[in-house]
Length: 298
Image (tube, rainbow, N blue to C red):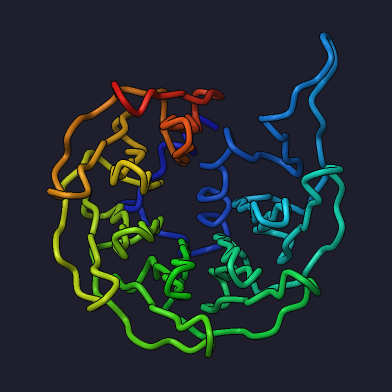
């Protein structure tokens, strides 16, 4: 697994079934196999945390805090598992496109967006009915997805097309395509500034997109193979997990410069932020661990 986790885009990006499996294994520290383990639940001493069985190769996860519902994209199951956050039970399994890889939620509209890497499309799920209401064609091998709930706009990276598709959430249509760097992967949005951040794994950089003009305003150099990205809108700080340099780049959103670089575990892949506590969490895919970072002190 360690050897597989060191796979980089320079060796080819998801060009066949074998590479798809390799890409999926990179997320091992976050959701490996067919279970999702809720990390934030307290259990009696000696008791195990709840483990929820989902589909084949769960790859991405998103939460709607308004409904306390969790959505898991099952990459080899071509489905999304819907989990009740109060009971930790599966309430629905929604069929989507081929090899779903990314999932994002707009809590304002209770709508879920799933990128289907093998189908070059995005499935749109109604959170009230758990049904697919639309399928949107996008660029080749869509991977990352993020939503700006304030503008009802969805951003999808196309890993083999050096582009980001911009989708109008009201009409479910692609309004424009923005050219970014090589092998764009993860996408994150700062709704407060209407700014979008895209990690370019093949260029060791992050593209910064102005959400009002859909123009790349800056390209920030980071460490090797940036994969995950997350934003703290409260501090206007962006965090980038650099897969092949065992580090986290901390970007100042006001200046679009790297303010700090934090050493983390082996092959960091995904990153998430709690703005309320200013705490950052990084999954180390080859270290079987999560690094917890104080956002105030890095």
